[in-house]
Image (cartoon, rainbow over all chains, first blue to last red; front, side, top):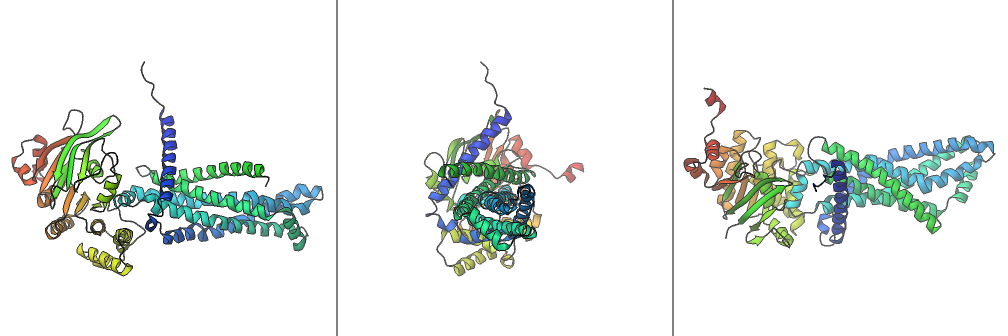
Length: 262
Length: 257
């Protein structure tokens, strides 16, 4: 019986899946060997990437956080006012921001800004044979290039999320003050609605999102193909993959937190 | 003992065989040239030799240690400390200046304090004529300077063996001749062995102690070796039509005349 050919799309999907597994294996290997290869994990690289991914993203995070807080407060105040419940806008916005929107939007910003940059940087290095140069020098590209980027985003994403939460609460407070509520009343509502566990859960999610977005961006860069479009395609794959993974992970966290009763 | 022994090398990608039955040895202190037309597998063979591509068949040993096949990982890792590689593009790290590029292997594999590393890297840059460009980024230098900086980086740990992929490609004749002189100086002063991938005829005749000529049609179904020996001897004596065509090629201007 003549063999049937696998469709190119199926073959490409299979190659992407196995490539992803190989990358995860390389990450685990690099982590296990880190004590022996600690010279290749340069703290100066972690600091540089943290500055790029964190400090330089701060204005955008603060702007978006404040706008999200404003918009959420306005939109939810309209229906809640009909029932005389507009003071509870503070409860709604604070819980939404701390548990969901803060970490989620920070990760989306990170995907668009940092994940794509990682893919483009590493993709360009691959096209220029710099990754080959590292390998023949006996250096591990995952330890030297991927782990510092993941460590940096793991550290800065919770901070960015905290900043986004704060900016969102300020935006919400501005709207509520405009509606005639006093700041102490708004603050009391926020404290009553949101707990430290909400904040901690959100920040923990953000740390995981940050590391995963960085890993997806780096993986896209290392898997860059040949040709002039390859780096652009890698950056696109990093953004799409980062956002999809973030949302899938958020769903998994929602189920986990539900099970844990948080 | 030869510094490289390769036997029965073959490379296949899917249904396509790039080359097969490639065997050769490189003596210590020799400039060994891999030559042939485009697409004959020179760069693929070099990727095999430096451990970037496991050969589909065959074995490679560097300084007596087998670096291919099962369980050869530690030997390959050890061999990589004994050779340096210059890629066709130079492959300098864009975020580091030239001094930083040359210092990187010293930082990773020696316990030298930073001032000593910097001094040694500066000396390597001076050796290739780039003493004044140490602080410049790769994006700020010419192609010829990038190749010389890549050679300085490859020399950082004083390896006894250097692989150079198309060192003269894209360079003007004067810069290409300077690179050839540098290769011969390193061979004569330090006894460094070289494997050079090139199809620049002038360079082959100027620097090659021995060569291996590949051709994409050496076998009915694959490329392979069509000639081996000192380049000047091949030029004078070989009767193989591809070798003759390679060494006897005449400039277009002469043909037109």
